[in-house]
Length: 343
Figure 1 (cartoon, helix red, strand yellow):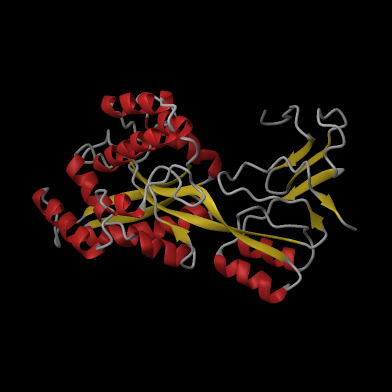
Figure 2: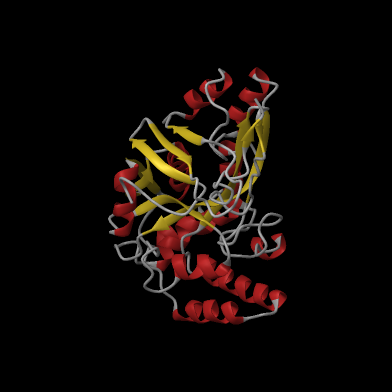
């Protein structure tokens, strides 16, 4: 799979050169007659987002990578390339605080609760997404998310009170009972994948943790090492990204006892029971109530606290036709089978 993947999709693998490009070609045996329209696609790998955006403006690419543009970069495209078609889309990927609850002193639930109370979610959205983003729980918030909690219920969850200073005052009291204070800060490393989507919010997280007597040092990790490091639970505190799809996918994989994707080793048998209950509930409204019960339990347990959902921008040349951007997954729509070029 790493060197020569195969499959039944609209395109066949041609070549992958690390840090250069990925090339695919039309699959003549694709099961859907007449698709895809394109003869092939070349994905050029550009590590710096600003550089990639400038290359798009210069006409080197037909489109930007979906959902990759920040608000400032999308505005740059609009100002320098008015003919481009751009869209800022609500996303299903959240940034979250991941804590290795097996490593002292983070095995103490009070300490994890204090860290959760330090979060100013709106500040993350204002800084990272130019004010465009959503506050939510483990499920993608409305309107794009079907299972997101109503705002009134969300604000009542532990750590979600919009009064950030009140939350942080509580956090400082907890930290003081644990022996920390102005003259005795807890020192930690904050692990983040070394790309902007992880690294930038990690810097903000470190700044916010200082408000509750925690001094963080950023530990950027290359992508090839980041995921194995998470699977080994070889970290203390991290800034993580995860998708929020259907409850049957998200809850068992990310929060279920013993799941290999449960990277902070969270386990609550009561939550597992609720996960099973919602899965077999045929009435959608009743299922939502169960989903929201799970959300409350996760917040009470400080289980991978969700910080925010950002929005991502995509721009394309007018010649690109048939592109559909999905709001419920960064992977949906990536088959590219309906895209064609009008030139």
